[in-house]
Image (cartoon, rainbow, N blue to C red; front, side, top):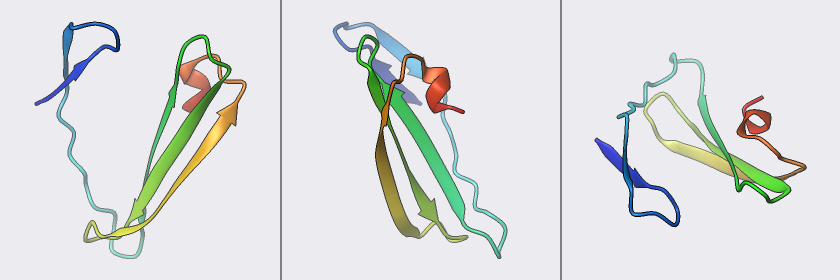
Length: 75
């Protein structure tokens, strides 16, 4: 089980356990995440690509302007 703490707080929060599932043989898999700080006008996205064996291929990250909600980064 993964555990996380809220920034500026000692409150512990339980996170669900996630498993990586490989893509079909002829494809690669891209995992993407986004983040932002409330009150700041930008956020970021990043991700990585893996082959069918889970081998790392490449990563990327990018700063995103005018982010006011986590929903913007998930679109």
